[in-house]
Length: 284
Image 1 (tube, helix red, strand yellow):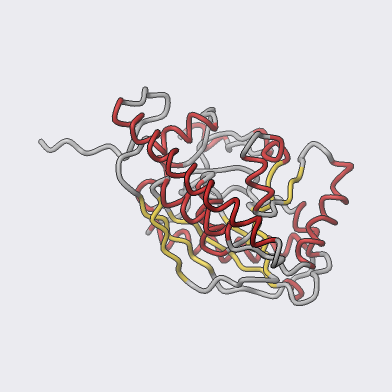
Image 2 (tube, helix red, strand yellow):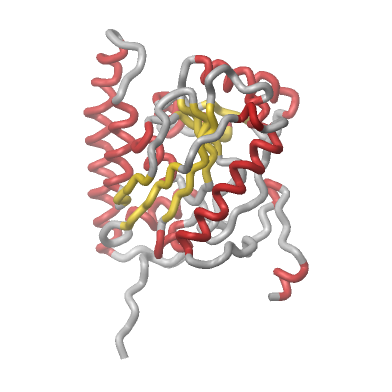
């Protein structure tokens, strides 16, 4: 009987000595890429407004983490609001490296040492779910980003899942599209990790550091297909809920084509975004 090779270290399993060796060398590679790209970024900024170095760094970091990114479709480079499914922190490296997009991220990321600083280099717009009184200010910052012709990515599920499911979309950050800024289009995006999707997903009670170590300790590389679907004009939709529905109606069929089967309900409760499994799903 042939033993099936595991995808990578399992959650909560100790990392082997070889795994720790991979973590070390991948971390060294990312640090070297950072030490090269950051000074060049600041030199570039003394002459030009927009710098390609954050995108170069994200591309290198994704590759060093094991992602072999393949782009399908044509990503719009500016005046675009990407709406994507979300599985992992690797999504940000890969999407940023493939398109140069900035991101909408939770405010806790901006307060984290090193990671927060790196996020600001890539013009991340930080938002807080708890600061309901500050939503107007967050929307204004998004409007300013779009007015500067940025590409902005939002993950409207509000959390990460397993690549087999798609949570209901939260529409609060889509208020920036009420009304849409002139010339801005919405482009749905599908991230497909293939056979490693469930393994790579940052889900459940797994901590961020534990997830990162598990991915960095994995042997070899993994495929990540980024599908940039056809864009649509948000002016054709009567409000942010209709925009979210239009994007979802394009993302779901694309995910199902990639999987070769229908999406399933997410198998975990996610109280942070108000998602609770149905009684039927709990009983299954």
